[in-house]
Image (cartoon, rainbow, N blue to C red; front, side, top):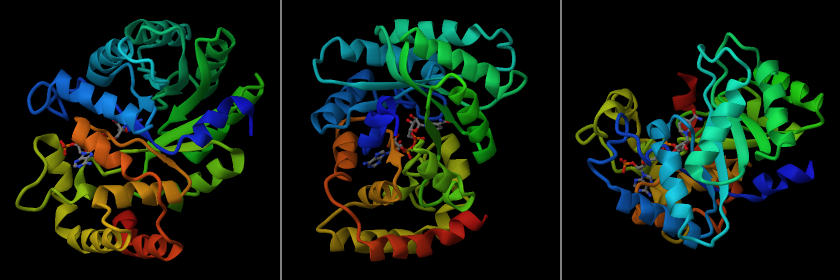
Length: 308
Ligand SMILES: NC(=O)c1ccc[n+]([C@@H]2O[C@H](COP(=O)([O-])OP(=O)(O)OC[C@H]3O[C@@H](n4cnc5c(N)ncnc54)[C@H](OP(=O)(O)O)[C@@H]3O)[C@@H](O)[C@H]2O)c1
């Protein structure tokens, strides 16, 4: 494993900062405030959850700006991961370094620990953006580089393009949780393990569904509710098993079981937390491990969700 990416493999879990400033999906400014988010930030660090995943597009820069403000009031070591969105109108390759510099300004830091391409969006090629990521590493604007939402073949293309600069592809961040196991069934996860690419699992709680707090009669608010309508009727059996396993593990919650399952799969979950309470609860996924039998039982009970 390349020494520069070792910190990512040593990081068991991070915290996702999409909701830190996003009104459209998450209702920032409505059901939670900057003070709540500050609580999530502080509690995560207190509980040794040090990696924060953000993006230039989250809250149109608000997420990065809030993190920049919070960083000024802590001495705790933080690992920062952010992302570049290759909008189709970003035709000039220099757009990447310009966007990275803007992210650094909002975060008010000289460099980040991980800079990721958010999605592969044509027309610019994967190679073009990898060449620019290589410059970002050489200019010490980021410690490592990664991709997100890349298929196995796109990831291999990125890996080879970076290898020409002798730079490792540090990570691929994809949706992965008990209700979406495409990373496993497609072979992506196995390939990541083979090449020492850290698989970062996003939406690890299926945007809140795996906490068990949402039901058919009480779905998640707003746009999330529409997406959940198809899944909620089928969820109780899996949730009952998660609750049983949590009890057998000495009183773990459904969310903690969901996150621990991802850690057992050799990935890094980055659950979103809107307040101190959620951050503390999610940190309770660390420091213990599901048994092999429990992982197998969860695999079996969740299989039907991934066939769709
Ligand atoms: N690369 C990409 O394209 C991409 C896409 C999506 C996400 N991500 C990253 O992944 C991170 C996490 O994903 P996500 O935010 O979509 O979903 P998630 O982590 O699956 O769910 C987060 C939401 O679940 C609820 N929640 C969290 N912890 C809880 C707890 N302990 N108890 C009860 N409720 C809890 C909160 O919402 P409520 O309280 O409102 O239910 C929270 O906002 C994002 O913040 C982002 O960094 C990346």
